Length: 296
Image 1 (cartoon, rainbow, N blue to C red):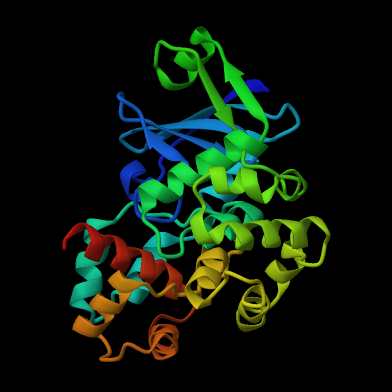
Image 2 (spheres, helix red, strand yellow; image 1 turned 90 degrees about the horizontal axis):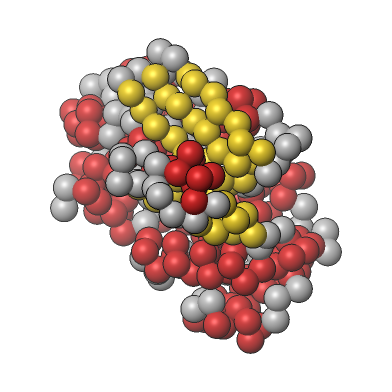
């Protein structure tokens, strides 16, 4: 691992709390100095923001291009001003939601990590999901050990620190069911094991699913045990660039019923959202979800 740093200037629609605490990711933690540290596919990153300038540094794979990775990971090619204008037209609630979560950006995370993470998310809460993912990474993933000086350079904290990459499909498929149970997976252990084995054996090819149209991609993901409609939409939105995906959970059901459409039927809510917000439905979902969850 090598240390690299980039600085992004004049960045709009980029607020650390909104991005990392809106519910889309599980491995980013706030530091005492206000920055956020997260483990991603290429290594461990720290992100700081000063006015309109974003500083991103990390210990990453020597071959990795940090700037190119961040351009994609933080969705910097999407015009969020345009998206906000379109989805908030004649919509007071959406305008309020956007005002509250103005700095949200949809992260383009690793598809396999999102598959496993959102299988784990079923009937679960964010602190426990994060802990379980950390347990799996510690058990099966590669270790990144930073000295006191290295971690201070990264996070500002004066302590040595060990981080763990999320395991590859092959690494996770080698983990026994007993070891997975020790990671506090509960009833999800068989689903996590089964999904990892299928991806490792190339019975499921996430990179191919990613290239398909939204409906077909969702249909294929839902063939995986442990993946329902909401989990599939989360995978599609947060790792496969399907911004028309509209994950429906209890918070979304509440706000949709209060403001937009009176139904508990998940399919009808999905259809309503797509018809209303089209290719920006997933971005709309994140504003609504964050707004409702944080203000209830």
